[in-house]
Image (cartoon, rainbow, N blue to C red):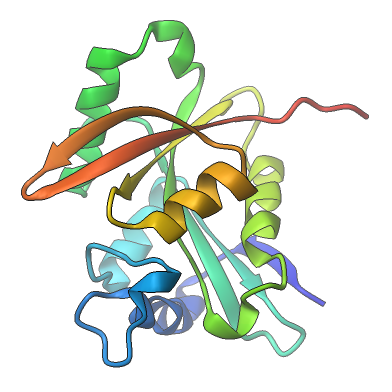
Length: 184
């Protein structure tokens, strides 16, 4: 059984292990499964977790299968690429498209968890975790060369591409998530 929760500092080493194969310089890395542009550190994970939350999926043996970072939608992000994304959004979207926003990502799923529904499970848990009164719209950036991640976000989670931007020598899509309507 897979469970979801907010990470604690004791989970950070396992989160870093899940992320390792997705770095461009990783041995035996497989970019066809998606990739991360920046290597994470324990300090970065701690910052994400303190800002809004770092969510994890675990199996019955408490092994971390995947993670999802969440950040507030504000200037002064510790990530320069997030700052660049936010500036693009402020200049291109109408205010009504920025309803109670937050930043979605990074997200990684371990190879052994592929096909188990962990990505969708983290997404569903995220909406339970985030207060509806504060967070309605999530934004993520995806490297335009990362077709696997783009398909996962747009096809599996129905995110919409809303803008594009460049940071240093890379081009990115910005995707938007809307809180699902509660049909209960």
